[in-house]
Length: 271
Ligand SMILES: [Zn+2]
Image 1: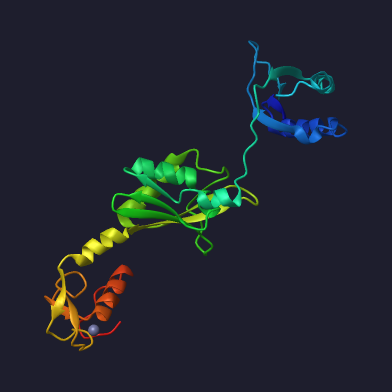
Image 2 (image 1 turned 180 degrees about the vertical axis):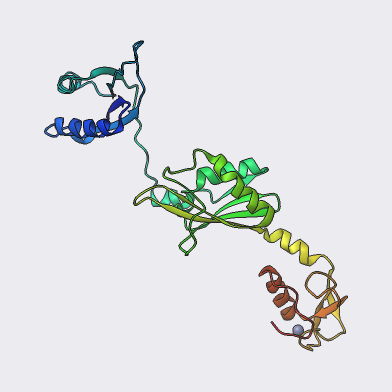
């Protein structure tokens, strides 16, 4: 890997120089190993004169003299630095992608924000949505293909300046309002919707409160079935109906309604 860094203040000139550098090495066998990075560096002497320069960084010394000689023709100061090592990024295999952990735990808002910031490109690796366990809630990131515009975006893989996410995370936790993140550029763009829901365990605790299981002599409050096994005086029935007995089928239907966020139906009505 050979990285040629352009350090100069003028971006247009830097872009032009980058093109010239690639042209300069187009006939070499190592052209594919070259990357040219542009830094808008403000390098100035005591008189305020700018000193643009190229920094050559490589972990391979094989062609270094030739590289230096070629770059010297560009009439710009050169710095040569020896790179200790270059570790190319690993591309996750399908198997590794599947085994990525799909759930993280966070105990405070900052941690939730950080996890979203660094995982905003990850959920599509696996088939499962990405989940964050937060107190008795789960925050879920799922690929989004709908009409809504993203709320916050970055051209990086992750949100480096993740404090920008904070207001969205705070609103999500306070009001349940979902938000959409967009990361990356070109072909590697990830758009995710972040939503929040109570965990299954919490939901169960909610409807279990005020429920007694047994064998009762009353008819089902919804369907007249004589075989009632649940006596309930809680969240699954309207507040005015103090208690009701249900057969197992009707009781399950009311649990399903509750999980779907519907208000409790009046008694003697079917789902
Ligand atoms: Zn019933």
